[in-house]
Image 1: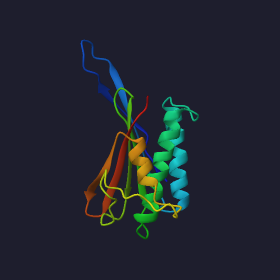
Image 2 (image 1 turned 45 degrees about the horizontal axis):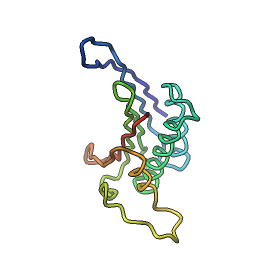
Image 3 (image 1 turned 180 degrees about the horizontal axis):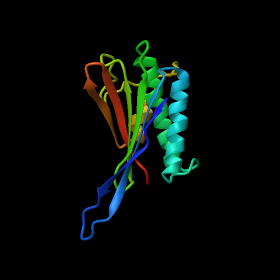
Length: 158
């Protein structure tokens, strides 16, 4: 497990310049169900450290989003011997959190935002990205290199 909490200074624009920290958390986890559960728990813990208690709405929303993205990375983005990466970035000002999950299957991409098909009512799965779309302000997929893809979302922490 590689854990990299970091803080970098950022500045708010306006008449007085006050440093507002941007916060970052990055960890590599095994592309297994255990790794997905650990991603959820570590995200909840990190948000708690950053000032959003475990029982807050923001923490519960972030935890759910991380769980969905990490589970998708394990189910649909798994490559033998390759981990997935969870990255949390709290934007300066602390009102927006970006969640990124990077997996090892750039060729297996989710549908684009707004194009997620409705799941069959008979199925027990297939609703994860619908939750991501409903609970986040923005989401999408980016390519980092020829070997990975990142599914990300941003959520308001108000």
